[in-house]
Image (cartoon, rainbow, N blue to C red; front, side, top):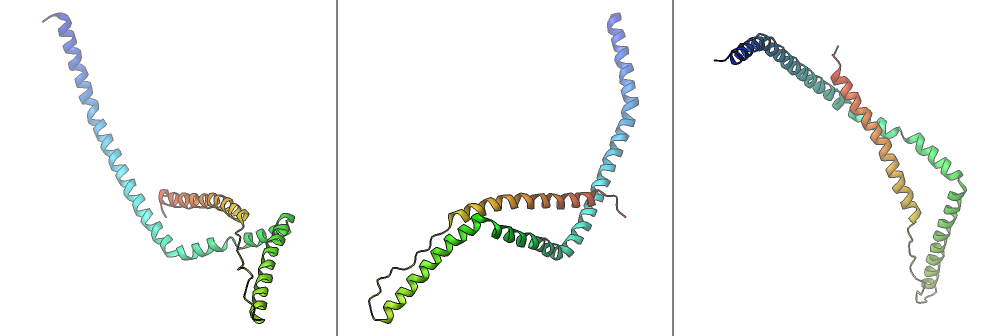
Length: 166
């Protein structure tokens, strides 16, 4: 065997001995890490069950509170909307459509009362497109606000589950 091969063989043997010397503690440390992770996973699962039980027991009150939390905002919205000149004009326009319908209904009644053939056409309803557009925009904006609320609920659960407990 050549001197180079002999040196390389000895070096490999020394390095293997070093690896064997360190691999035992490394394997132990890895096992401890896995055990700690398993313990933490079990603890978090227990905390999640505890949180879920608490939440399941209080969801109705929370849902009612969430639903009612918009009551004041709804009233402020209608107050602000009613104060807007464009809205007042739109109300006036829509009222004119309803007035026309009342006139047509009264004309039909009058023709029937005097025994004439009813020639007055039925009232046609014209949907207000502007409202559909407003509602579409409203739904988009309100969904974003609700999503922020949902994120806070998820964060609340995660914070509870991550906490070490009492």
